[in-house]
Image (cartoon, rainbow, N blue to C red; front, side, top):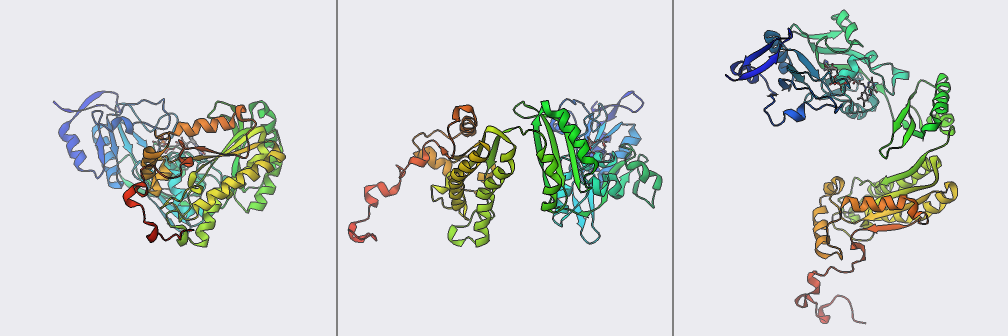
Length: 491
Ligand SMILES: Cc1cc2nc3c(=O)[nH]c(=O)nc-3n(C[C@H](O)[C@H](O)[C@H](O)COP(=O)(O)OP(=O)(O)OC[C@H]3O[C@@H](n4cnc5c(N)ncnc54)[C@H](O)[C@@H]3O)c2cc1C
């Protein structure tokens, strides 16, 4: 007899018949995953990789109706329920063993009312979704400090974030919510409707019901002055004490999170992350005492170019704004990054910029001022190396990489042809690997390259050194233009 084995809320094992599961499945717009399904294992993964729970059913809800069906089904069969919002809860409360997971990960839509300054977001949204939509109108509310946390668990737990000094906790900005309570009823909850429930969900955590939508008060926010100050862990005691003193009189526009962390390279660090929501000049002034304290600990700074909006236009069709945007995102961003972080770097530190050889080659389909921007970046590498070397004793170099099918390059749409062209014609025809670039960058940042600064290093299997491709049709005898027809006059 087919069916699904469930550990009920009473702790007994029961079998729900296949037929009942089928009726439940048919009532949904979303779908149900069981342990035998291919996507089951991926769907039970959450942020904390140590959590390994095995629900009997994962219901991927598509809307409120699905949530209602889930709660009603769970009630009638005594199935224990877990609710998955953003899946960030460290204890793994988004999953359960042997019961049903009401998975809201597909319910992430957000609507902003810019006149009332409110946002309404579905219960499975993450903060990146809400920030993305609200910032289109220059608005935001207090969300989490990282953008992939779910709004569900965070709001129900109170929610602290960068904006709380001025705008309070996330739950202080909660205007209303829609939820399906354990009796299987849909309720809109606000200060004037179900006030006791409204009180409970503002900080009381989960289990008061399944929230299908949250409505938040928004505030004008941005641009902000934000970033991270890093120090060797040996300085942590004095840095954290200084932070405490500093925060006693800091303005409410400033949000600060400080703690101990391990860098991806394994360095033990003390980090102070700041976000000032106000004019840049005021932010610089406010942050000055923090930035002036302690000994900086940055050794390596990696800059990567960005493509500009008109990247696919030929240079002749590029607007002035598009051209300047290309220079700004590629070349000026290296200048700005070096100026900002150079003072925080230790002597002997290395800045390395990653670019692509468009300054050397006319590449049809890759225009919009990008070749000019890259030429500027490579030229600035020399000047920056001089200035930053004199100022902070650090080195600045650039890697000009050959064609590589990265995500950004693929978006431009010509990269596959470039890779194929190189494979056919480069002196080293093996495809360029990300590791080739990584190894060269590691070398440039290491003491082995202590004497190298102001250089543009080609990592391209020799592509930059080629004059004409060996298989070019122009080289075949048939395609040679007779001198009499040549547009170039004979000397
Ligand atoms: C890297 C990281 C950074 C963090 N930063 C912050 C921070 O800056 N500020 C802060 O306040 N907290 C922060 N947290 C803690 C975070 O708020 C909680 O882990 C929170 O539970 C995450 O919400 P979620 O929806 O992603 O979690 P989930 O794991 O999906 O759910 C957590 C709990 O909330 C319930 N729940 C989730 N959504 C709903 C819903 N729609 N209806 C009913 N119940 C629901 C779940 O059932 C579960 O009990 C952070 C956590 C991590 C791992």
